[in-house]
Length: 415
Image (cartoon, rainbow, N blue to C red; front, side, top):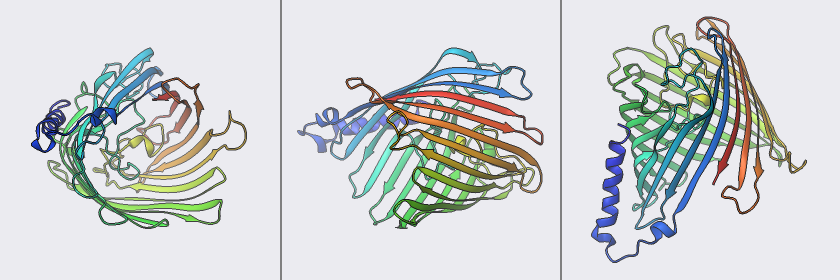
């Protein structure tokens, strides 16, 4: 499925663009001359030490993305992007398809594929229709995202319609026929045939309040337990206290039940609240997130950017049957006006405490990171290089979870 739906849509759209009489006699040079080549190279060294697995994982991988986005011609625009993930050096890890089950998982298999290939049309006022393989990130990516942390993106084959004709109101609808997951085409669940519908509306009342409502109807052929319908609402805002400090918050609630080919019967809830304060380079934030579970079925988020939530050790990519409660606190600081070698450096620390909904102690986790971008000499294809050090330490309590430590060293060049 990785080359069927999206490729047909891309080729059909391209044929229409080239052959339609509406374009006859008009220059098409702007498609190339006003287009942009883009890409990046991201190297990552990752280690995993996990209780219950005798061997430690060690992974050295590089991701290379290169693409071209055309100029706009008669309200049409196109984009194509290739993505390659390669192992260079250390390869003692389970990438989910290489059979190395004696090692912990580092879910970055080698892949070579078309990451994005879409054609968009903006012929209606304040409306864009995009057809093909594309990245879709909604809100904080808790329900729909591209999983940008992993080396292989999660992309969507389908149609996206976005409209902003009413001031301060953004509307979006997407139909997704296939989900290209991070495990790649060699994994049995690397491509998911779906009948997924996404409806999303966001209205900005003021800086202190943006209200969002959504509905996600996910029907997955080969993973029936992930088929669900979800309805939710989300509030976010930023409240200035003075010229230097401001409060910010997000509050969200959703309800979910079975859908499509899912034979289970369940109704579970989702809640998330997170206030914070920021100023003078500091950001302090606390939060509580709950995903419901009844001991048999639990709230699921199969299209989410899961690494962003419930700890960087990725112990809760699947919600426990008993549900999950995550109480967390985060502090970060970004240096400025100190020294050019230090300015822009961001330090982050996050602490999580994990519990089951009704019972069960799932442990705690400490996450630490330091990152900075360094300017490169003029004349090089890339303007800067971003360096990231990241560490996660998960301490388990109740079975089946086990202690896990992860470390990352990452370099990213964008051009």
